[in-house]
Amino acid sequence: MDEIQKRILLEVADLHEVPEGAYNIRANGASAGRNSTANIEITSKTDVSGIDIRIKPGTKHESVHIPVVLSESGLKEVVYNDFYIGDDCDVVIVAGCGIHNCGNQDSQHDGIHRFYVGKNSKVKYVEKHYGEGDGNGKRILNPGTEVYMEEDSFMEMEMVQIKGVDSTVRTSKAELKAGARLNVHERLMTHGEQYAESIYTVDLKGDGAATDIVSRAVARDKSYQKFDSRIIGDAVCSGHSECDAIIMDEARVLAVPQLDAANVDAALIHEAAIGKIAGDQLIKLMTLGLTEEEAEEQIINGFLK
Image (tube, rainbow, N blue to C red; front, side, top):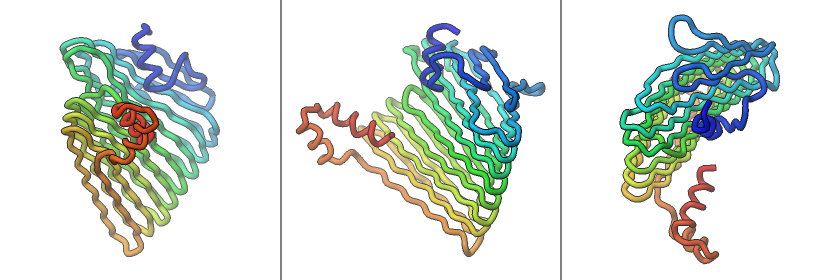
């Protein structure tokens, strides 16, 4: 990998070097490195572009890194990655895609990730998106995530996009059996004329299933954001979604909450708040010696943590 690709890898996966454990690194449409372990096997698909990741039952405190980097202008690809996580596991999965585009053609990566989470397993999934480059070509990322959770499993999803992506449509859906829980934490910032749409659909199918979907977003300049969440309660379950956004300049933010209760004991809640940075917050920081621009950045950084 060249220095540009290594820098992007650091941004999307916090990797300074080849990680320990299982990994699959993809660069410009080809494999740039792969390693399986005794408990985690990574194999290439034979029918479409992508990989299968199989994690043995009982695997504890292990990780999988599957970052993607694009540094060629005009490259477009669709990749399918399936995760088969056995019962009684406790693992961390780090994904993400970074695009460096200095050309005039659009570069695009669409990654479709499917998770099959076994009984009593615990999964933390981190997905980061990043874009850079001074070309006129756009940086486009359209991730799709499907999650199928067995009884009493737990999954935490950290979805982050802070800089440089011109257009993204993130589509996530999940089905939870009895006692399963899914927590989603989204952090998003758009600027310029960027477009970002987040679509979450969670079906709580079993008694005791629960979900918590929280989005923190900042829209600047003339960018556009849409947060579309739907929680379906088919059992004795609980669901909560929250969209909290700061709007600046000439940006636009649209929140579309949907709660679909099909059981009298389904407890579903949605919260949404969209507004500008409070003037008293700016004044307080400016009295400490910060400029207005520095004060705004401090507030935004704190909000997106």
